[in-house]
Length: 321
Image (cartoon, rainbow, N blue to C red):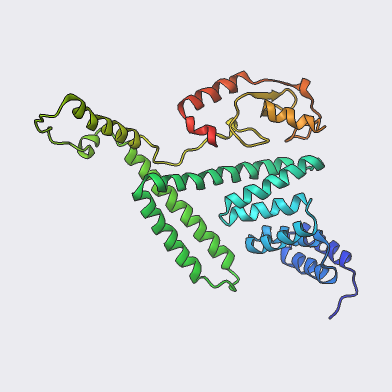
């Protein structure tokens, strides 16, 4: 039966259903609104939010891609898209669109910038872990072999799922969680093997036979020692996922801080240069709390600076985070 209501009226009905958490009913109303007027971005965005609540992430992606096509400045469109991609195990794509959402939120003084910051930080972390696993695969044949087995096994199970089944999204999410759990367990075992218990070391350390007498010159005898030192350096390459505590990361760029300053109003720390750049665009407010703020409201965070320097001195790789 054809509805006599306008697209906007169906949207409002959908909003009412959403408030009562009747998400399926809300989806129906938003879908009808889309049929009546398919060029209004907010209808797709609202439906995507319902799908997000129901954990139907593939549908969220489809709707949000349409949202940003119709409205390239939609903060929520990019935000919902990033959240869905992160849940689907695509941290690199998630980070890219969430960063776009964050930039737009700053421009528009969005009320949920803090929510975007939290999920963006998680996306950056997951993106780093993904890159770390690529690194581990390059330095450890054992890790590469076993992690590939885990991924192939999960992929076979994913391919066997019925995509038309009502519980497809739930089953797919469970498999993604299982893959993450298995990889984490593998990385934990690898880390334990890298730093074995003192009582175990005598049984796993290689005992080389005594060197054979040689008539080689002194310079020739030194060559194997150089090779050995290179091998020792290689074995010191971390065989586990490296992570940086969140409080060392700037809340604007999500990169490691070298000159942290703290807001005397919100108590939030930022990298000085990125905060000054934020002010240079005429944005005289705290990027996260949205409270009014100027350069006069920031002071050096010396305690955090010392902690950052200490961490970096022991973990030089953090410069590339």
